Image (tube, rainbow over all chains, first blue to last red; front, side, top):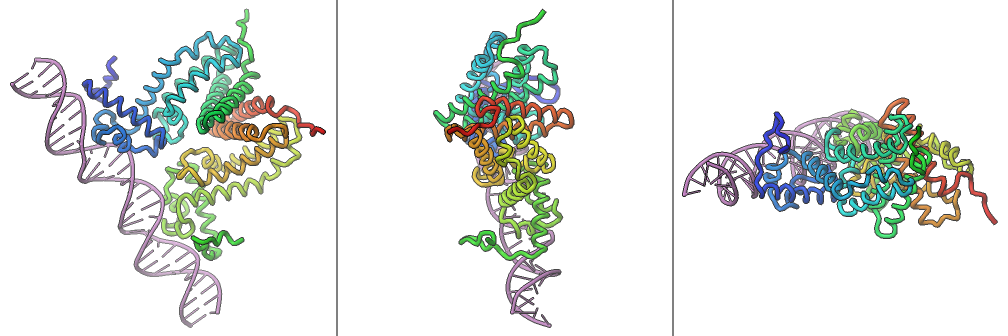
Length: 215
Length: 215
DNA sequence: CTAAAACACGAGCGACCGCTCGCACTCGAA
DNA sequence: TTCGAGTGCGAGCGGTCGCTCGTGTTTTAG
């Protein structure tokens, strides 16, 4: 319950001040990751942005990757708090285009407010291939997509469902990244294209209407 | 004609040995970029892979970025030599799915043979945002896609055409990258998904049949 | 043949990175 | 009030990286 008191690392007792510092450091990390991407973001720069020394940063995070992981977890949690209803079963029974709106719009809006989200999930400069914030966000979202597709097209073989979810997720991620590179009307136009791409891809695969449960 | 004898840099007269070294270094760079991506690929590693010293590398390339740019130009030239007919007008008049096969299959095959191509065009770790091999490849391909779409859907407003081309290109790039992360049958299945995604996206936009020239 | 230019080497420079360490402070439970 | 644990600092360690430079060798022009 109190973080993970596992064998290797003592989790340490935090004072209120420390908790504040951690949030401060995560905010700074979000800003710097967003500006430079994970690899080019230096831990010293994150500490400077947070107005603390490098040593202080390492009082709260064992290494650079842990910062990204914590940030990823915080972002995911914030998104689930704000838009946790996006993937509910109710939406899955909507017509395809409405379902996409219901699912995508909250995520898009969240990305507008938290650009670090995309910076972390989009950048392929993951450190050790495994772990890293990208994996946290990716795995969670991917799983939601898989569940939605399975609910909607239960007759689809599982491995095919995984492929469709993966492909749809990649299209969404890159399409959103594309949109975020533009402003105002142009950005809106790219979001329209993104939805058109997803609709065009998914319609033949999982149908435009909700699946009527047979027998 | 003789490279660029512009104000700032003297282009230097190359011997046969030097030309060979450059090709050798580009081969090595392709291998290392492919293994590590642009940023994590060190110039010393490229020199080592080519069996020369770091100093020798810098006799032929002024800096790391120039290596990537030269490699990008060489890859693009090789692809145009091998599959230059992919974007010809003849293919543009085919039905959509056939057209996609005609255009995508050669590019996919080329990527199987030259994995550095994807490594360069996919990695977002471009150095100074501008230039770099990625821009060379991206701009060239993007332009081909734009021309194909304009030919096929001439009534489409130009800026909309650019957006469609950009979106389609991104879907292709990431879908191919996804496929390349798998092997054998799984990879083939992802290529099927990639084509399904492009077909689904482009069919409503530019039509399944070639555009009949009106008036 | 000779001199200049191209080629080749590899130690190492300077900058930066992730991260450490010794020490000073502040807080809060006893 | 006390004192240990939590917090904070920042110089700097060990390492990697892109790139340089002095020197020596090979090729080529005249």
